[in-house]
Image 1 (cartoon, rainbow, N blue to C red):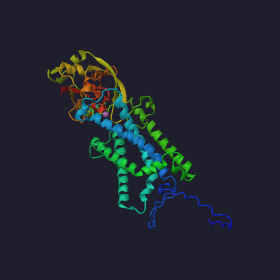
Image 2: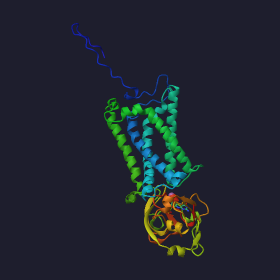
Image 3: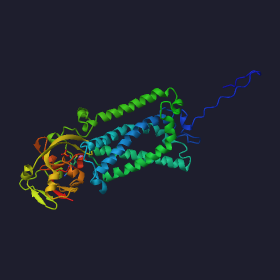
Length: 410
Ligand SMILES: Nc1nc2c(c(=O)[nH]1)N[C@H]1C(S)=C(S)[C@@H](COP(=O)(O)O)O[C@H]1N2
Ligand SMILES: [Mo]
């Protein structure tokens, strides 16, 4: 603008202070510094700004935090260290159902959120110069790790819910280890970006002033679209564990009603080689200070207890069922187990990661922990563990051992 010519007699007004914006508050990010080659991409589109990244990052952060904490819970409930094994609570009976349901729900919700976030920030991949300093290079490297691990965790987790394992490593230890790498990279990322996050967090934070007005409705549309995508994937999968919504369960690998005796099956009797267990020769062997054996008829003659307990599969489906059977506690007492004993349960299945299970004292002593013989009013079907299977409150599905042949007091 042309400087205004002021008449001599008018005193010069003091200049208003210039608003100095921090670099990330400038409305359009300059990612392409001087000296970039002509072929280097340039971005003029809106919504690749820190404010949009912060808005989506908030939701993504919440989803991955829930996913991380429920994942840790699941891991330590499945493989507790020795000091934890006897004190893990066996109540509430639906506890694991809720935490594992949340793990899968938050993981699935994080997928559209992660893609929206990556779309918002991808122009930064083409920043020029590629690195301004060693510090900047390390910062970019940490983002590369974060993006790679996020994609890895969400992909392996999603594929695991379908029981498809297209990789040469074992899922559980790798998914668990990568969760820590992810958390480390995420904390570093949040620490580095903290000033930007602060400037763009609230509706009246400084970042909102720097926003070109025409971007506001665009951003709103992007956020609504992302929310709709999250809602759609959630509503079409959550019915696998939230049974009132089961009618909407269109994309989940399991439907709560599909399976023998009204309950899904993860590992079928055919896969375990236990399709026909002969009643005449089957025995329950109980090893302990006073070992003994029981026939199925003897087991059926013992006091029967009924319980309403869920199977909560780690793969994400869960459902309540009505179980009838003998208290594990009664079976252990009869073997002369001292109070506070753990129990090892061995399945008739010849091979399989879940053939042998150990249960801490809190579960073994819970009056709802049963060696179940009946499910929903019928003798257990082969797929549900005929002739006898474990059902315990607040336990992951993988440890609800089917086709039980032997109990050992530890
Ligand atoms: N012996 C044995 N028991 C097992 C399994 C197994 O592979 N082997 N799978 C478990 C898993 S992963 C789940 S989710 C539950 C499912 O029980 P259901 O098939 O009766 O619904 O059984 C568990 N019991
Ligand atoms: Mo499972």
